[in-house]
Image 1 (cartoon, helix red, strand yellow):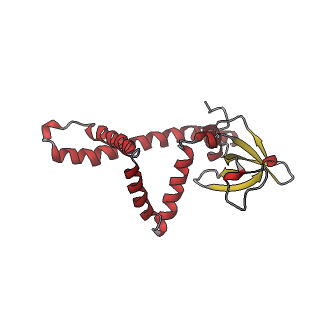
Image 2 (cartoon, rainbow, N blue to C red):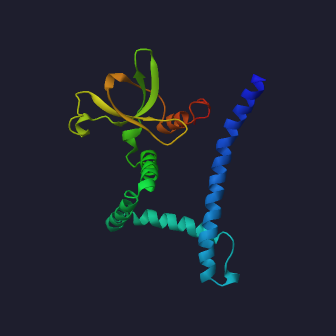
Image 3 (tube, rainbow, N blue to C red):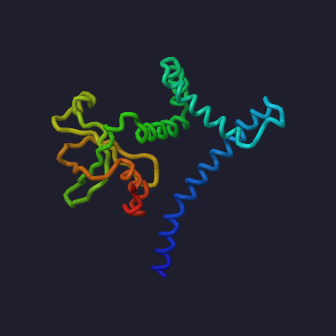
Length: 198
């Protein structure tokens, strides 16, 4: 019975990420087609519209926003709009967590985050996986600038969140893993192992 349960769980863990990824893509496509496709139908005559125009328009909007974000004025305008979210009680927590997470994953300064380390905790040999986010102590806030201190992010499994800890460099050990591999391994609590990387 245990063998059957273990096999079923393995299959579930293998299939579930695929299903969720495909469903997310499906939801994005359907949403873009429904929202933008409906707007296009109001502008174009019925015969001129064909399925998929909403998706193409959605991809175009995303690309256009990416282009506009290179302009200083647009970035300033976006920052002011974003500040509104930071002052809304419930939305503030959710939006800030999502924003920080995606900034961390898709940062243009990725080199600062590519050092994956194992952090030793206590005297029993317990270790957790972390990411060095600041290795230059002079860049840390005043009062935290230890002689050999580094800032490490410790992500939590199965959820968006984690802890930022200040550690002596001697408390960490570099790992031969990319940030993406380590993040997937940590977020799934190691259930899928390391054979799915690459």
